Every structure is written in C-alpha cells, then in structure tokens.
Image 1 (spheres, rainbow, N blue to C red):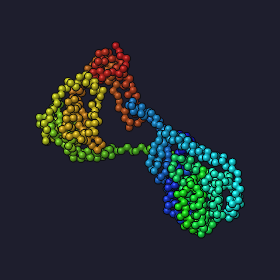
Image 2: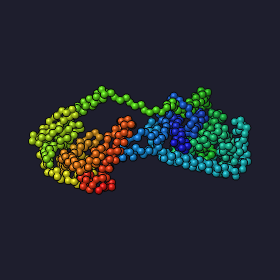
Image 3: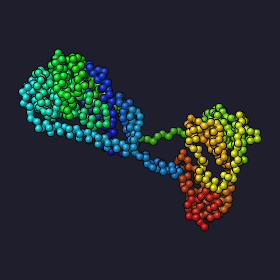
Length: 615
C-alpha cells in the first residue's frame, strides 16, 4: 500500500505535469493574441495555473480533456494473490515463490514507466526535502525584510506625501499606505501582503517633476489595488512546492512581466492615452537613476528589468483603451482556460474484479486443422530451402556429410536436424545423403561441387571411457562455441568455417551453425551417440541385475511421473504425490547400496547423492 507521502507526491507530480502543459499553452496564447488582450486580464491566467499545481485534487471529470493524451497516471501493483500449488523444478520453484517487490506504474505521454516502491518513496522524500528548503528560504527572506522594516520610521518628505495623497484622491482610495525612505530599494517598490508599505530610495523625489512623481505613485498604487503581491506570492509558493519543474520557474518570471504591463495599462487608463509619451519618459528617467534594478523579495517595483522596458515602451506607445468587446473576449477566454485547466478524463466505472475468462478449448477438428496449416507452412519452407551435398566420409565408423544449407556449411550425421528436416541416411559408398521432411518424404542429395576433405581419425574408445562419460554427464550440452567465434561467423570465409567444423569433429562433436533473423542457430550432436546409449543400457542392465528383488521393485517404481501444468489442480497434486513417493523409494535404494552396487551405479548414472551408504 502507498503511504500518505507517496500519494501526495503522486498527486503533486500529476498537478505539476498539468501545470507545465498549461504554461506552454499560455505562452503560446501570449505570443498569438497577447497584443489583443488586456494585460490586466492576462495576468489573471497565471493564478489559474498556480491553483492547478497546488490543488491537483480539485479537478472536474469530463468526457474529453486535453490532458487525456498527456496525463500522468499511476497504479500500485500489490503482491499477487496465492494460486494453486504447482510442482516446478527447484530453480523455477524459488523464482515462483519469491514475492515480487511492489511497483508503481506511471503513464507519461501514454508510455508506461515502472518504478520500484522504494524508489518512489525516495523520490517523495527528495521532493518533500526540496519543497521544505525552498519554503524556508522564502520565509527567511521575508522575515529578514520585515526585520529591517520594523526599524524604519514613516517618511515626512512633503513632496512624497503630497504626491501620494493626490494619487489616492485620483483613484478614489480611502485607506492610506505607510511610506518609508530607505536604502533597501534602488527604485520605488511596494512590499508586504498583510500590511503593505511604499518604499522609496533616499533622494528619489529630487530631479523628478510633480507630474513624473504622480506617475510613479499611480503605478505603485496600481500594484496595491490589483493585489499583485498576492498573485506573486501564490506563484512563489507554487514554485517552491514544484521546485523540480522548470516550467513553473518560467511562469513566475512571465507573471512579474505581465503584472508590470498590467500596471502600465492601469496608469495609462487613469491618465488618458495621450499621456503615454510622458509616462514613458518617466520610466526612462527612473531607470537612469539606478544602475542595477532587481526584484525585491516580497515586493514589486516600478522598474525591475531593463530588458523588459522595450516591450513596455511598445505597449505604452500603442496603447488604446480596452473596449467592451475586448474586455468580454478576455473574460471569456480566461473562463475557458480555467475550465480546461480544471478538467480531467472521466474515470471508467468500477467493475468488480473477476478472474480472466478461460478461452474455450479448441475442438479436435480445430486442433487438426491448425496442425495441418502449420505442417503446410513447414513443408512449403522445406521445399524451397536450397541444399547442396559437398562431401561424404566416415569418421570413427560413423558416416558424416558436409552439406550447404542456403550457402552455409553444416556438418551432419544420421538424425541431425536442419530446421525441421532430418538426415535419414548417409551412404558413403554411393556418396549420397537422404533428407526427410516432416511429412516423411525423402529427398536424395548427390555430390555437387565436391570438395576433398581430410576427415580426422577418431576412435570411439577415446570418448567412451568412464572419465569422458562422467564429463559428458556433468556437461550434457557439450562444449559451447566461444562467443567471439559466433559473433564473427558471418565474416569468416568458407575454408575457415569448414576448418572450425572439422575441429569440433575431431572432438567427436557434429556441429551445424546457420545464421538467421534472430542471430545464429546451432545444432550439436555427439558422434558416438549410438555407442554411448548402448554402453549406458548395458551398464544399467548390469546394475539392475545386482539388485535384490525388493531393491529392484523400489528402483523400478522410482520413475518420475510426468506433471503437466495444463492438468487440473487435483491431477497435479496426485502426480506430485506420486513423484514424492518415487523419490523416497529411489533414495531408499541408493542409501542401501553395497560398495559393489555403488560402483555399478556410478558407472551407469554418475556419482550417487551424498546419502549414508549401506553394508
């Protein structure tokens, strides 16, 4: 189960992704139709983005949402419920019994991303630590500013007080603002959410006319009346909570720009559009009196960014009062944007969990038809495959043949397979090889482009000694071809490939290698398989003959039954019980072997298990 921290991080990650999409949409909207909308309305769009990011749960289900294709969904995978016991080999049993770690599946842009539960927990802890640091850093900056403000005394500059009183009367404001002169700021600024204050740098009124000072007061009071400090504070908190999302850092920067442009509109609307040139000259004069304006933590100023002044001047010079139609269009667009940002895809109705329907078993007729179709495809391929017999010989009394399969040399003996084809016979005297397909139809190959080959001299006695047989029992897959040879096989010339195959033949291994679409397919056989099987059969008969009637009965009953996973659970349990009983009988026989019987058993089946020996 997911903890509260993980669920909160999951919701915040989803909200952060949705907010990033909205930031991209709003940036495109500002570029396309920004000059036709009121900046005072456009600044409110950022509030909607902040709410989406801070309140990811407050969404409205809708039949369609633009986030359907860009959603971040998650699902916790609990451990699977217990299933019917199934008898497996030891290695598979350990893998099946081990409970898988709980995972979390995120779907980002319709692509699943799987995370282990502990990784998801670490991500939640990292997010919480980063958000806590960012919030504490902002609180520390605000507290430091308040600590300095407490030491300030109200300004008694008559020009500043007169300009402020005149601007208040012009805007119809009844409440007043404390005003201070301090070197904390380089340009006039408004700071404080609960108790806003106006800050002016020392000597600021000097060099400005009364009309220019009026423009400055109108701008700062515009920030106060529009509640821009509240908007920027909400965005700063949003940036702190979603510190990992660069889109929300960008959103705060653009929001400050829109707030300044909105205040410029506010000043022009209350001063008349024909005063734009005078207002622009005021901004230039204010900018000329400071070297490096910078945003004030917890406040807004009249000039914060020199690079943005060009855009502000263009808006001031091209300013036209916002008409009724433009205002209505802006409000409608803002409402549509807010609704879109608050929607999400409707959740599908909950369906009670039920086991997957078991597909109906095919009828005997359907199974026969499928077999016929598969056989027809195999026979079609086998009829097209190009086979060439290049050489026939005898090694250690066993007939072998060098056959080209689609141009690739293969070493073959009787019973060797070629993708469904089988070597039915090799006639050394007639220099032919017979290949049988799946349908039992024979195809006789005669020598074409025969090649003189020095067949190695190999004797069966070298490979049928007890030591050699013991090694073969320990490594039933025979010697594996080095990976370097397999990777370079396509680059080796024909003579080199034949020499590699002859080297394996000298070690009594018949090897066929054929490149295919999946890489390299390899078939390996033992040259003296018939003799080995006969020798094992004789040694088994000799061992069984040494057993007492009671031992022989338990040994014969020790054959392991076949357990099929397709059988019903009851049948599997019955077969598992038989397998357990057979193993106990076999262990009983091996534990009671005499020293002579033990030697015979090891010659036949290899070293006996480490069990207490009998007499």
